[in-house]
Image (cartoon, rainbow, N blue to C red; front, side, top):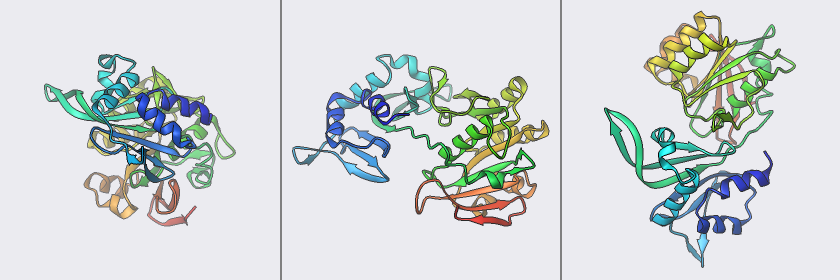
Length: 313
């Protein structure tokens, strides 16, 4: 995506006054990560991994209720009701794959979240594709031309979704290590494909099928039954149903690509839900990321027995 296109897509969903303040800063939008609007609080941007507070007449700009309302109108194209399903998940995906996370008063029906009213804060997460960021991984996750079951372990915000996205693209299109094959993606939070009006805004490859905003457990089963994937990819597994569906995928001969939050392999082993799958060696490779130097940096890669294959890629 071109920088100017990315900038235009993000700016057009912001309230006019917020837009003008950001335009005045002349940011490089390849380094803009998040834009935070909270009613009654300072407006700030996460830029190149650092918070930058926007000022007006020498003082930090305080976000108003009107600016949040106006921004929500642009995000929802003046039809909040049409986006209730996405809002119930806490976010709306906009053109370009950018995501607007929202918080406010939660409305429930029969114990299920129906929508969020009286939105009080918005977090615009700017989409960034980093094609080629998974290049260094492939020598470790391919064996005899086949993809090995792989689990990516990472603290939040350390680039695991960006890495998995590029892995999916390369598995789907094929590269020097693997012949292109069908990939099924159960994209529960619309982070991998970042679909907008049903179409993925991120490039996940020519042989990839995506179930957008679909719970992972149900999505994995649907993909296996209908799309005949060679590889199943999901982001942030964490429930017993998620793990059961991955177990089913294994029995069907699918290869697995998944991620989980954690600082290291030992921490994941100590989670009750994961102890069994690690002991039973569901996964052939464990890729541990570290955000200490930069997002997406590989700290360690382990084999199924827990032996280290490499450090600091």
